[in-house]
Image 1 (cartoon, one colour):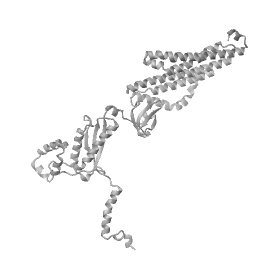
Image 2 (cartoon, one colour; image 1 turned 135 degrees about the vertical axis):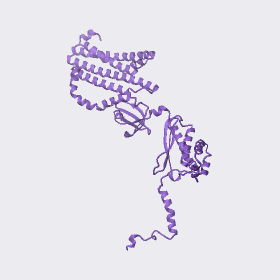
Image 3 (tube, helix red, strand yellow; image 1 turned 180 degrees about the horizontal axis):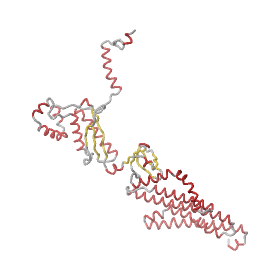
Image 4 (cartoon, one colour; image 1 turned 135 degrees about the horizontal axis):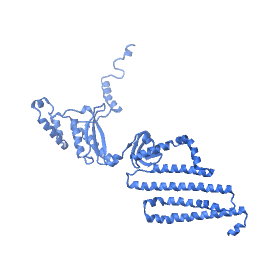
Length: 431
C-alpha cells in the first residue's frame, strides 16, 4: 500500500493502517534481531572464547534481548501513526514501555543466570571457590522490585520517585514480608565469607534431620541430600542460628578417625602366672613389650621378686597384654595412618564391663574402605580374646535367664518339691 493511498483514507482507517504497518515492522524486526543476535553473535562468541563473552553473549541472554527489539520499535514508531487519539496513543505507549521493562528484566535475570552458570563450571574445577547463587538470587529479587515500581509508575503515568516515597510508609510491612529473605542473605554472606559451607560438603544437622551432602545453596534455602536419598531443605538463616557439623576437614585430610571400644567382662581379668605368661610370650607382637617389662623387672631387688609369688614378678594382667597387643597390631596394620594419634587404652569400668578403646586414624576417608578397615581390626581382636583368657561382656537375655533357672527347677523336682510342695507360705500358715 502506497502512502498516497493511505492519505486518502478516513482518519480512523489511517490509524488502523499505521498500527498494522507498525505491527508488521515489529514482527520483522524480531526475526531480524533473532537472526543477528543468535547466529552472528554466537559465531563471534565462539571465536572470542573468552569468559566475559560466554556470559554477555550467552544464547539465553541474546534470545531474550531479541524479544525486546520489537517493543522498542513500537515505542519509536508510535509517533508516526497518523490521527491516533492522544489517550489511545498514551495507553499503547505505556503498555509498550511496560512490556519492554519486563523483557529487559528477563534479559538481566538471564545475564545473572549465565554468570552463575559460568561460576559453577569454575567451581567444579576448583572446589575451593564459593557459590554466588545467593547473590544472584538477591540481585534478581532487587531487579524485580525495581521493575515492579517502574511498571506501576508507567501504567499510572506518574513519577517513580512519587511511588518510592509512598513505599516508605510501607517499610514496616516490607520488613515483615521479606524478613526471612533479609536474614537468609545476611547468613549467606557470613557463611560464604567464613567458608563454612560449600556445595558438595557432607554436613550433619540432627535438629532438622539433615545428614548428607549439600547439593544446592540458594538465597533462602540450602538443600541437603541425605544418605537415604531424601532431600532436607534448611533455611539459610538457620545455619547461623543453630550449630551443624561439616565433615569437609575429614574429607580433605584423607584420614578418618576410629574411636570404638571392646567391653571386656571384668570377671575374666586376672594376673598372669609364669606359665600363662610363657604361653603368651610366643606371640610375636608382644615380644618387644615383654622384653621391656623384663628389663624393668631385672632391676627389682630379690625381696620384691620373692614377695610376688605365686605370680610372675612382672605382675602383668591379661587385659594389659591385650592392650599392648592391640597397640602393636595397630602399628603394623596397613590401613592405619601411623603419623597421627594412635592409642589403645582402658577406660573407667562400668556396669557393662571394662572398655578397651582404640583411638586411631585410617589412611583413607572413603566410607566403604574405612568400614572395612575398622571391621577387620575389631573382628581380629574379638577373635584373639580367648587366647588371653578374656571374653566380651554380654548383657543376659531372656533365654539366658530361663536357661539358668531350668537346672534349678529340675533340681527341685528331683528332690520331690513341686511348685506347691515347698515351705508353707505365710498366708497358708494363718489359715
